[in-house]
Every structure is written in structure tokens, then in C-alpha cells.
Length: 206
Image (cartoon, rainbow, N blue to C red; front, side):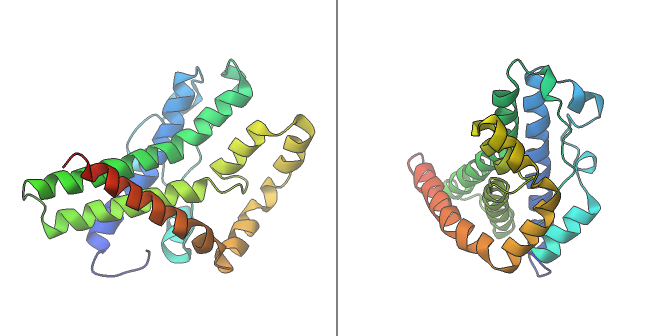
């Protein structure tokens, strides 16, 4: 899915959209729950430059995993810290899945009215793939990915604290998981089911 080929013209904007929407959704969720931190720090925006981490973007392109700049969140502003963090954490992957579904609807809708050019299809197709994969990758329960924060929201206090202590090693765990091919082993079948389900759902309307 990454690297350099003839689809780069379409893959770069698709990837930027996936990253930007993901981080914006985190910021919007935190802001709606009463935390002004993302707004104050200029993260409540759809401007990609406000969310991109250059090293994380290069790693995503070359190594198959990477990151944007995490949205700073202060749970003390939430009425319920645990449920608030769970909501904020899921907002990013949830936004990615919604955007993938929206791209699927555009593909079917434009094709229905014979307006789907090859370039538009290629862009929308990569938007589907990047958003599904990026959403699923971030749901892995590896600190500091969103999945780890969601898991912590369900763990008892002592177990949650113990799990949080893994965060300094999260980067190395991710490298090992990717190097061993576990991400593809875990994510590929789920992504295929999600993409197939989105296509079947969209076909009901067109």
C-alpha cells in the first residue's frame, strides 16, 4: 500500500486526508466534551499541516506504520474521565471508517450516473483503503495507539496503571509487530470484511 508508483498522485492526498480526519476527530471529540486544549493548541482544524509529524509520515510511507502528531487531551475537563477518553480515542478510527464508507458511496453513486473517471476512482479507492487500514491499525491495543486507550478505559485501576507502563516500549512493540507481519495477519481479513460490507451496503442504494 505504500512506496512509490504511478498511483502516488492519488495516494498522497488520500493518505493526508486519512491522517488529518483522524486527528481532527480526536480534537473535535475532546472539544465537544469540554476540553479546550486541542482548540487552544490549534488542533481543531482540517489543515493537514497542523497534524502532520514529518518523521511519522516518512515511517508510514516506508515502513508501513507511522503517526501524526497526537492531539493533546486533558481528561480532567471531562465529566467522566474514563468514558471521555474512550470516546475521544474511538473518534479517530470511527471518523476513518465513516470516511471509507463515504468514499464507497461516492464510487457507487458516480458510477451509477456514469461520472466515475479512472482518476477519481483511483483516488476514492485509496481513500477507502487508507481509512480502513489506518482506523484498524490505531485500534490495536498497543500503547500509545487508540486501541490501548480504549482498553485502559475498561480495565480496573491497578491493571490499567500496569498497562500504561508499557507506553515507553510501545514504539518497539509496533516495530516488532510490523516486522513479524502480524499487522497484515490481523488487519487484512478484517479490512477485507469491512470493505466488502461497505460495498454491499452502498449497493443497496444504487
